[in-house]
Amino acid sequence: MINFSLKGHESKKFFDPDQAIWKGESGELLDINVSSNLNLSKLDENPHGLWRYRGVIPIINDNNIVTFQEGNTPLTEVILPNNKLVWIKQDHLFPTGSYKDRGASVLISKAKELGVSKIIQDSSGNAGAAIAAYAAAANIPCEIYLPEETSLSKIVQIEAYGAKIIKVPGSRKDTAKRALMESQNSYYASHSYNPYFFQGTKTFAYELAEQLNWNAPDILVIPAGNGTLLLGCYIGFHELVQQKIIQKMPKLVAVQSEKCSPLFHYFHDQNFNMNLYEPSETIAEGIAIPNPVRLSQMFQAIKKTGGDVVLVSDSEIIEAWKYISRLGYFIEPTSAATIAGLINYSNNLDPNLKIASVFTGSGLKSIDKIQKILGQTNIKL
Ligand SMILES: Cc1ncc(COP(=O)(O)O)c(C=O)c1O
Image 1 (cartoon, helix red, strand yellow):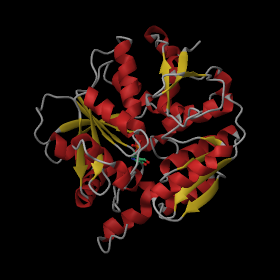
Image 2 (cartoon, rainbow, N blue to C red):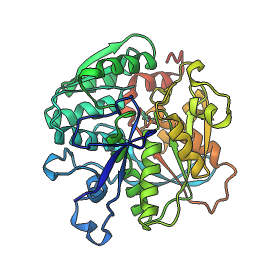
Image 3 (cartoon, rainbow, N blue to C red):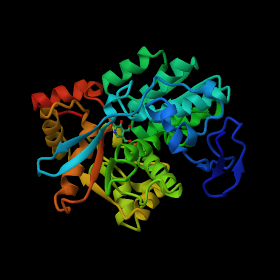
């Protein structure tokens, strides 16, 4: 039996977890606190993959679990161009080609458990593909709102899973606004609002810690758009420390594109006003989120771990992508942004520090953009 509570982020009020809600009445964000512990001695009775950590995932009945046996992604050693050795989790190898499957597996399992009859979601592509795939597996009708400029491969993938696609003219912000409006009448399987998504992305921390013999790395470099991986990692490592399975939190270092960097500004400038922030287009479409709803939570997670936020340019992203491709990994440009940040950040670090990071998305998702990088002409985003 898993013990957990659903709580208002500001009001700290408790909500009934048997209700199909994703926000409080006043619109406030909800958080989940799991108080169950992982029984390490029984872990090998569970399958490999993210449901191995079933004991801390807030799904009540096993029959509701929607899974493709995903997770347990390889952790490989990579030598960066500055000769630093880092550990990289290959989350681009998930069934739908990105780490978003972690969140989708748990969120859609919860939607099934709650008897939800239709879900909607908005995405820059990868979260939409993950939600659409798991919704198909659970046989729940699904609508995905996408910005018009979304990579063609992501649109095709979502369509293939049978989801209804609604292309929204304008920016990523306009897509989010439209989905929020439509969400009044449907279950909003949002990866930024819905707290169950983060209960899936937290398994990244459990897997990484187990792969390091129940230790945290000293530094974990991750991308930050809506912060679903960042906050998932914070939740997961925090739970592991509370359970005394690991001794300390890793420093969380977030990477943003210099063309869209609200977290960077919020972190480094007390007077930053997100509502006035005007981003420009970047090749890293997945992290181009100008108004992340959990911005202050992301800030707190980084601050509490003594971490930082770093910026990368599009040309650094392209250089990092080329370097990683020549090592034999096929990742999408958004994913290479994290590696560009990792290279910059690791330049002056003590070589004894254990550094970990992630490949978040497969190159197969962004063939159109990659073709332009390879052609090197006219990189229109
Ligand atoms: C490949 C890839 N990397 C990173 C991110 C950023 O993720 P988050 O919104 O969890 O910060 C995304 C989001 O869509 C993505 O698609």
